[in-house]
Image (tube, rainbow, N blue to C red; front, side, top):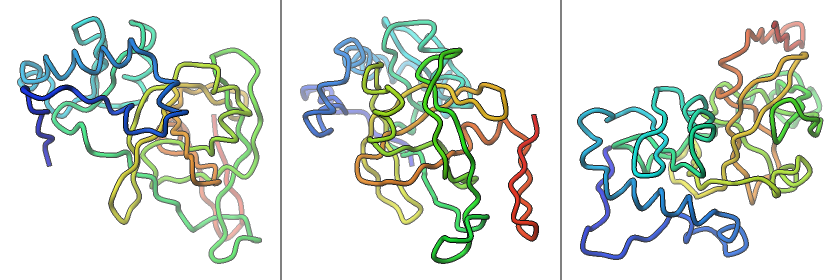
Length: 226
């Protein structure tokens, strides 16, 4: 369903204002301005960009495409604190669905496919190595608990506002970080949501779609090929 733009006669309310105050304070005022400028220009963007992801900053589109993790990283390289969204679908959350089929045999239920992944705040720099990261082909993006985000140093890098939801519907706002992960000696762009309430580590399709992954349930193995 396409998003209806804000009432032009009403004061623009930022998505960041819906976050808890301690997290809203992390959001750059430049990002807030780019968000407001996007909505001012949005009707004029529909003809060219409807259904595409864009990064908007300084009154213009600085990156666009169909894959959000690539658009988000490209926009961050092109401009300061860009507003990233899917034109015409701004309120649709990135779905996070936990796959219950894998290889942590101690899990209560079907075993979970888990990996050990290094999360890096910046490309080419040491990060934090986290185990028990669920490889979730049903998740649009990656999620970490806020404690894990802090361990990775993400509380010291710019955060943006995003929206995530579950398979059962509904959505919540989150803080999103454009970071990097290292798996099997190679580095990949990642779009990670900080989950303020949950504790699971979920590696979503923003990263998994860049990999060749074999889910070998009978053998109890998860094989990642470079």
